[in-house]
Amino acid sequence: MSTQTAQPIVQPHIPEGFMQNAAGHLVPADQVREQDLLRDALVNELTPKAIALHTALAEFKTAALQDIDDLVAIAGDRYGVKLGGKKGNVSLTSYDGRYKIQRAFREVVAFTEEIEAAKELIDSCLKRWTEGANQNVSAIVSQAFRTNSKQEIKTGKVLELMRLNIEDEEWQLAMQALKDALQNVGTAVYIRVYERIGQTDQYKPIPLDLASV
Image (cartoon, rainbow, N blue to C red):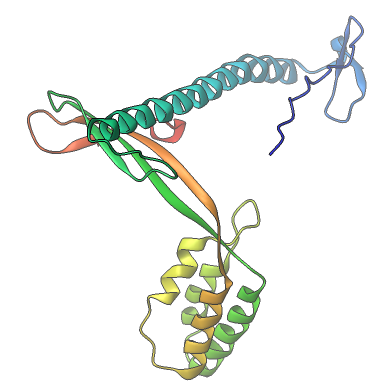
């Protein structure tokens, strides 16, 4: 697969004494509200720091994965085994047991257009089951097909429906449609770092995302 070098974004020239608004219009700086200036200054101060953190995390992940691959390869060489292809999940613990690092793979799945058929069948079941009854049941199941901010169906919520043991011919057909709609689109790899809690055998994660810090 060929790779393309990212081209630098060329910033437009802003004449002295002007600011460019979100619509691309030049506005005299002395006509911009003070609150807008303060907001602009804060956003432009924080964003480069966030980009630097993102770059550092990406570099850490790349280096960590390579180092773990090398360690696994060394273990294989020690026993005369050539390890190749996709590696599996690995858990590494420091000699004193204080730290633990895990490499974990997860299959990434998406739904094909067949999920629309499954949804219609499920809707049909719900209408039949809830006729004259509380519509909250229908609302709860329909939540599974709500999309996220990227207009993607939340896979986990839909898969929960497949775990329901419902003896109904139309429902079983809907579940078969869901299975047929599942498509493996790749593999995601994660690096998780943990620290032992005191002298116990329990570990707490070291958060690497802003929401958990």
